[in-house]
Length: 53
Image 1 (cartoon, rainbow, N blue to C red):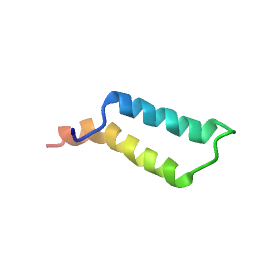
Image 2: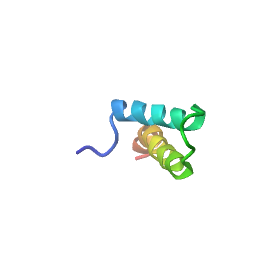
Image 3: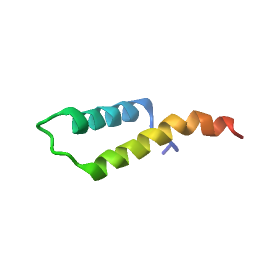
């Protein structure tokens, strides 16, 4: 299995985060929101981290 998430996983996580934050019918799950944010930020930082070497 690869180190990071692929683009499909990334898009699904963004969709889930959007749903948690914006859909009034979905209960707020703060721990899941923070978890998704951490995963998404790692994906967003991956190109920058690789360039620092």
